[in-house]
Length: 158
Image 1 (cartoon, rainbow, N blue to C red):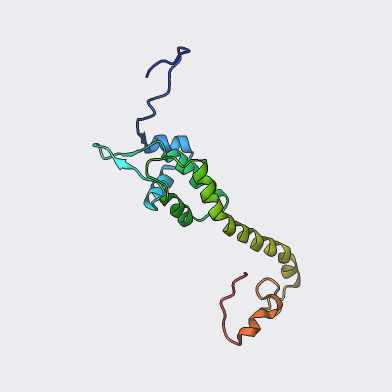
Image 2: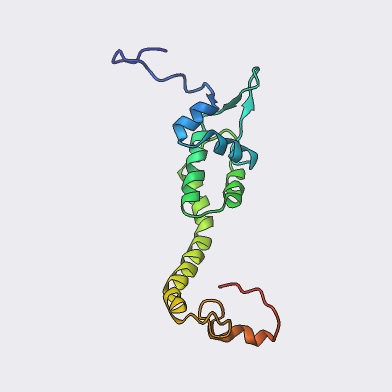
């Protein structure tokens, strides 16, 4: 390691690849999660001569994007799709994040609307205890399913 201008130790060479343990420690993500992300195509590694995984440093930013998107409820398949549009071995930047988050916005707003309806109607449903598919404001508001005729129906709360 080289010394910095203040005489202290400088950071390791930023061009050096990271081990799976280093990525786990720096990202706060378990090694098993890193392997899972790699299996799902969210991140990439390669094997060195000793058959050990190595990662480019841009993987840290990709993991940050993955964790942020997961935190707001974006499914991994959608995250993988968004990350696949980025060039390999380049950290996602603020413009990339803006494009990805804009694409997820409509779905997130829809989920918020659905959860708000659920929250607002949940206490009355539990309070009445009817569990009637004809009268339930959660599962069949306004008995809308009767318009489709008799028989089984897949009930979607939308």
